[in-house]
Length: 361
Picture 1 (cartoon, rainbow, N blue to C red):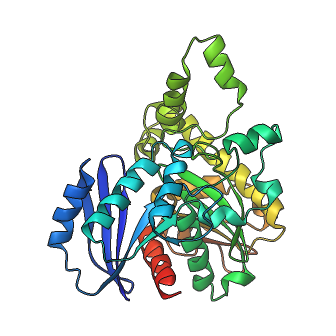
Picture 2 (cartoon, helix red, strand yellow; picture 1 turned 30 degrees about the vertical axis):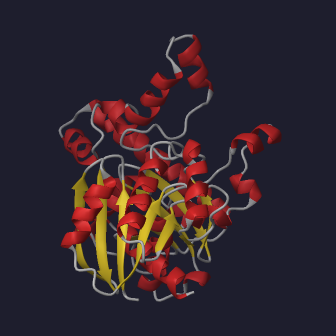
């Protein structure tokens, strides 16, 4: 039961890791659009002796899937029905599932959903204030994403501090090319920044995050832009990329250090949005035990961590400059009311562990 293969299929790649317990035996990325052929070749090269199951990352589980789920034909049909909610992701996830089931028909397959961790959101936290009939007809609802990362990191925060997850309130900040914030109370997601899609919330590498919906109407009516053009603008040509021409925070930091005003503004907009969410989630939680940074930017950009939490001292949130620059796991001063942590995420390990839970249930 220890050996699990994790498969994450994107639009042109298969990312994989083979685990034995929590140890990685093999892993990597294969570029392809022919999933079954690529998986057959990949699996022929891996040592699958004693393989207990395959865990698949699935981006969107809608309101149906609140936990990792053993895959059968009905689950495949349900994930297919959810394609309109995640047209860029679910089709690739489905292709990987179909290919793996064909190549390994006797091995149990488990779907682990990015959205599942956020199914604990209350109705007020997950409901948009639009006509209820329209919302129900078209599935308009706050689903949230990066759930495997927020689940893993919030538990690792508790472990680092020697606490039980159910006793802690944590704000987790997953800052990568995609970025989201989550308020976790007693191990359960109670608020998260991404919404019906991964576009809402924080400023990202190329996504805008929060903006006035009227901007879409304005660009269409006054700017003459089609809905497809606006979609591409907000998802592919916004965020850091739209603000300064670079979507990679490393390049933004380098240009900012050299005095580039566009990069400086992009950095400030990015950090202010994070600060706003931290303050809002403090209000949601009422008491915060820890704020934890994770993912590429969160784990490696000390300047972002310092600026994003600057000015929150009245809330007990303080970053120690020396610890932050050294990249320590705890970057708040000794005795701080709120512990500020930096914890590497491991979504593949989380998927592997959730897959085992399903298989042993």
